[in-house]
Amino acid sequence: MSRAQDPPRGFFPFGNPFRMLSPKGSALSPWALSLLNNFELLLAERLKKLMPKSKSDILTLSWMKLAMESLCETHTNINTLITDLQLPVSDWEEKWVDVYLDVSVKLLDLCNAFSSELTRLNQGDLYLKCVLHSLQSGSGEKKYLQARSSLDSWRQHVNANNARIENCRAVLDSLVKSLSLPKVKNSDKGKVLMRAFYGVKVQTVYICSVFTAAWSDSTSDLFDLPVSDKPLWAKVFTDVQSVVNGEIREMFSSGRSTILKELEAVDASVEKLYPMVQDGVDPVEVESLKELGTQAEKLSQGLDQLLEEVDSFFKMTLSGRDVLL
Image (cartoon, rainbow, N blue to C red; front, side, top):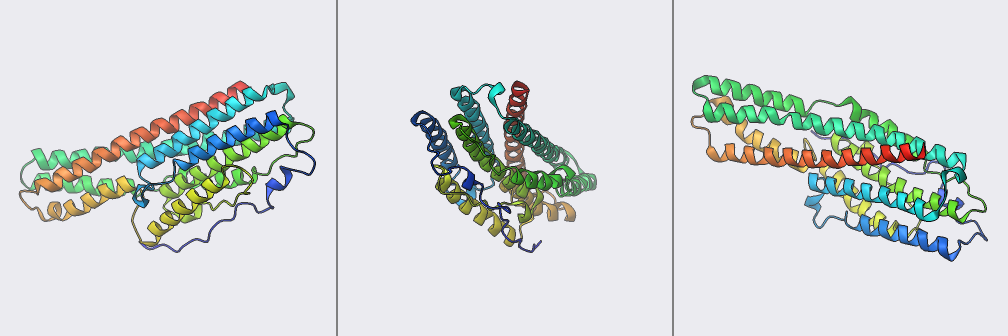
């Protein structure tokens, strides 16, 4: 089904927040600068791993799992940085706490939406198992009727809309508005903390926007994020974003029914098998049944593994909120 192409989405409707990062005469101390550089270099290395070796790797469940693992590692690093800064919560400005709590509750909402979609898609595996069982152990016209009914149910199930995913757009838009950096005066620790938070939020918002676009089948949920060239991770992030966004838009423009690679493979197997079932071809090609079983298993395993990573990210975010509160 062809889709109209959505224009690239701007990221800073109110200007570049990095203007507030390095006011004149506010150079960081060597100690603070070292902590910031170490954090940003680690983030750069992590982002580099998301550069696909081949465009065909983009939006595979294994790539999405890697992206979610990367987010978990980044949020672990920000917790480590806070410890290294020796900045007790009592010294946090109230607005920093408000920003952290506001962002984290939105991340929990996104995690819940992603988990619900992964669970929903995985429930479709039951219909595919019924198809295989009907065709492999059934007999006569009844087996074809049962298999066709299960295939129709699978199609309807995987193509259904998920209201939680549709709501992710509003959550992501609100996160974009939180990306302006609070002004930090006379505090090297505060400046490092806010700049590090900025890197975390850019990576988080971008990856969550890719996930949302994949499940909503819409480029309107895909962000193009311009970033300052000052952070050490900026060039790597820009390169990854350019390659990934370009390929995703190419997928949408080609009119694919889905851009999730493992789901697309199952869909292709279903389309190959459906005419045989519909026409009551006996016996059904063994290779077609085997192909469907193999692709369905890959999809189910990939969804399970990604769901585990999303759950880990949820627990990490919730734990961070609990500690701060």
